[in-house]
Image (cartoon, rainbow, N blue to C red):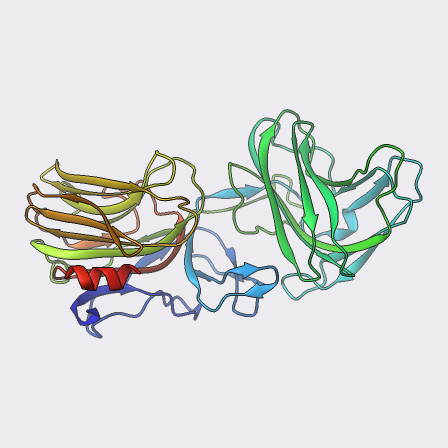
Length: 394
């Protein structure tokens, strides 16, 4: 079936600006990727690395220290790490508020960049009420949604419980259980300007110490979910990563206006109830799209011809942050949405859009950027059979 494809975005794993393999070879698959700042990704060795301005990020999944073998294109919104010294470990502090002995901090440990900006924290056996802070006690975020993240690993294998804290009503317990770096995350709603800190707080009058961890790359950012790590080195207002944009692939010769299939394999960054779209369009009044909506865990598809909606179909999955294979088959009076090997919804009364000439990972008007982890986007210039669609999306 792939010989029917005209455009394909398939991450190659080479982070040199190449986003895709184009099928067929003479296809017009060039995308324009822009981002007004540097950013980070996890590479195939499981390390964080910086990526230059405007270069796309092919990010590898990292689960409990194990690197996945298939990268995805990572597109994220703008975000700011408000921790001012996330890479200056000499400013980090350990405080024992209880009657236990003071612990120790050892700098110069290997971090997720392969450098030496991690620290080892040794909690003495009688540690009671410990607070570990990252160079500041106040934050520029004093209210609203906040997301915290930190890489942690055990020095010796013996699971321990710690507390992430953004403010008195934004607290989460984490179970540290790996001798490989794991990124621990939490989200909450702040009610004060208290800065992100990690606490060891067993029951009153008891000890929870006697172990050691290594930590690196703390991040505090406004928003309902954590994004990729943004290093800071003493900047007063933290550091901001710009949003990613991926647009302008294809021509009218690559997109069949009468019939075809738009296929996307992706996982949303969050179920954050916002519009995010992949579109075939003409830049104004004609669109074919697959996207996420303002409804929880909903995947939808729409066809618009001369600014009139011709088909609107949707399906609710269990979790849009998991990867799903989505195909929209379209032809006159025959529109079908396939997800994960099953035909989920149909519309049998639809006029086809006119003069489609572009593939964007955003809406026709330039909004609803497709902030997601994307493994594939393929345009087929003829309709596929049900058996082919079942195979494609399984």
